[in-house]
Length: 575
Image (cartoon, rainbow, N blue to C red):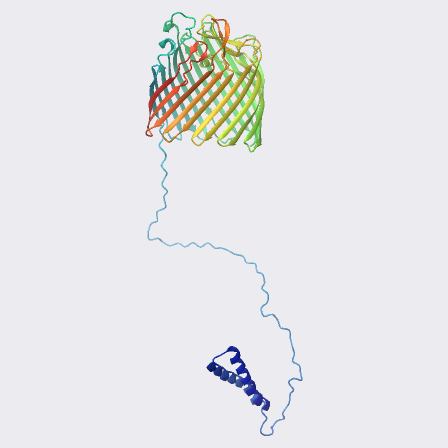
């Protein structure tokens, strides 16, 4: 213990100096640390000095000396203080808690105002006047928004009192009244139909090339009275497996020479879906007509039925079937029944925007007196009537939609026809026409090209058709154009100004001049029409319409010159 008393002060001084020198303490801080370390060492060594003192007198008990360093202390491995964490799987449960508390005020639910619908002007009246002492009036009356029914009434008057040949002898008048309706039932079933009335008057003014004096108007007058009525019932708009459409119609036609024609027709169509890709189509039509003329009374019946299998998916569309036709016609040697094939195949080769199609089909095309008059109103009395026998026609084509605003279609067809009809001037009355038929089988080539473009405010369509007839007996396809070009354009310049343009061109028309006993080619027809509408207000607008603005004296039928530039101007009121 004497050793500790000697060495301790010495070690204590060395440690205090080293701390003050290393930490660069201030002198006062060094002294303070000096005393703190001194006191700390005193407390640490005090028990050791007090226990290890040598007693001043001999001990009462024996003193046992234990060599502390003689026996080695037992050692043991130290364990980790914190064991590695274990992965625990937790299951979370959510409990919905609803707190109910009374409100001291009423909360009004948020109300979204209904967007007002744009007002519809279903009715409007148009009226105007033009050159050639032309008067024009037209009215439309329609229902607006109704979920149960809809109907419409259309009235039209157009009269040009004079024309290009002997003034009033080439005038014309037409009055029309059309009524249509729809009645909606549950299950998307619809009852619809309509009735049309038409009164027309014109004159056989194609006498100028062989008449020395103009004939009286009453001798060349022709009137037409036409009534059409039909009614249908269908569920074709419903999402049903089986859809149907049945209808019945009545047609009446009469002229100034007491010729009459009446027809009753019945139409039936059933479509059954086998699955999402396949379906069966059945169609049956029946027509019974009675024609009375100076040659007597003639009844004609035409029955047609068709069965068609249809299959389609995203790439392919296929139709296979046939058509059965029964008919009795004016020529006794005609067959009473016929069978026709029907095949159509379409293949989408690029994203449903480029389609190739081909097929073959045949049919009996119905020809009635009223259909001939609609094509050529200058026909003579007691003309022969024959249905056209389309023995077969094969076709191939391409249809594209490269963009939503551009569509293009090209088609080539070739087939055999029997009883093709053509118009020829009557040798006894050159101002009137008779119908000539090519009763032999006639090959016909037809080329079609059509482009439709729609871009912003502009929409235009251009269509070209070319025909070639290989007639076995007749020398020419009388009054049938070999080339047709049609261009229609509509342009909305602004919300108030609108333009409509129509242009058509016919070429290759052959006619037989009975006065000269030779074939002549009529001048190509080039006709341009323009309509301009300007809206002052939503209810008031003005229009100007011009026909044959190129002012050509062309003839669609031999000896019948049309009027040159015709202009009509007027106003429109909508309500």
